[in-house]
Length: 395
Image 1 (tube, rainbow, N blue to C red):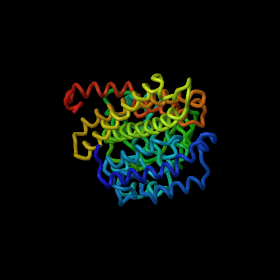
Image 2: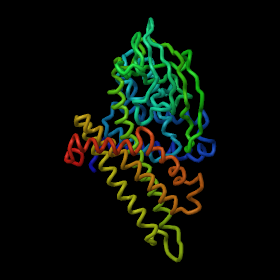
Image 3: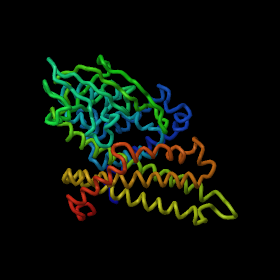
Image 4: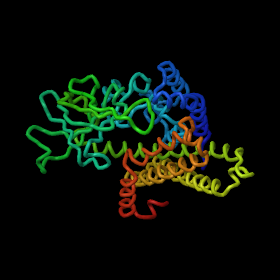
C-alpha cells in the first residue's frame, strides 16, 4: 500500500509517541487498576500536542489537525499498538461537534482539543444497545429550552467529563412516546456535567483496566437551552450514523495496530525460545496460527485503508456505512483470534497481566460488542450487499 511522504512522516511521529509515552506506562497502569499519576498524564498530553497528534480530524482553527481520513487512520493504527487505553489521554473530542454552533464549539470543542477537559457520549440504555429504537430518554419542550429525563448506560468518560452529549427524543408540548403517532425526533444535546439533576447510579468494573470508566447515569429533568442543541432538532440520526462510521473504522485500524504488536512480540519470542530441541517457530502448531493471523492483519489493513481513501475521494456515505461495518466485523474478530493465539504461544507467561498478549486478550473482546456488535455488523453488511450490490461492496 502506497503512502505519501507526509503520511509516512505522520505515522512515524505517532509510532514514536506510542513507543515513548504509551508502552512504557502500560504495566504501571494495569497494576494500578487503569490510572496513571497526574504528572505523567500532563506530560503525556503535552507530548501529544507537541507531536501534533491531537484532535486529528477536527479543523485546525479549533485546535485539531484537519487530517484526511487516511492520515487519521495511520495515527489510530499506532494508538492501537498500546494497551490500557493510554492513548485516550491524547486530547480529542467526538466528531458530532463539527455540527455544533460556533458558540458550542468554542465552549466545549476548543478546550477539549487543548487537553483542558473531556466530553462524554450518552446513547446506550438498558433496553437500547445496538438497536437504538428502544430508547426512552426524552427532551421535553419547556419555556426557555428543554428538560431531559432518562437513564444512560456505558457513558464512557462520564465520570470525568465536563460535558455530556446526550441523545434523546425531542418532544413538543403534549407529545408522548406512548403515542405511536409521535415523531421520533432523535436529537443531540450538549449537557454540562454540573447541571442540576445529573447523577451516577452505578460505575461497574469491566474486563479491561482503563483509567476512565463507563458509568450508568440518570438525567432527571435536566434543563438545557435551545443553544445547547447540537445540529438540528430531529437531526440526531444522521449525526449518529456519521459517528458510528468513524468509531467503527477507528476500531478496525486500532485492531490492526494491536495485531501488529502481538505478532511482533510473538515472533521475537518464538524465534528465540526452544522447546523439544527446536525453536517454537519451527513447530507447525505454533507457526501456522501466527501465519493465519498475519494474513488476517494484512487483508484487514488493505480493506480498512481502502475505505479511508474512498472517504477522502468523496464516496457515497451509504456505501461507506456498509464497508465500515465490514471492516469492524473482520478486524475485531481477527484481532481476538490473534490475541488468543499469541497468548497460547507464550504459555504460562501469556496468562500474566504483565504480558502484552494477556491484556490485549481481555481488551480486544469489547471491540466485538461496542459501537454495534458483530451480529449487528453482519446485518448491516448483508443489507448493504442487497442494496448496494456485491460489486460495490467488494471492489
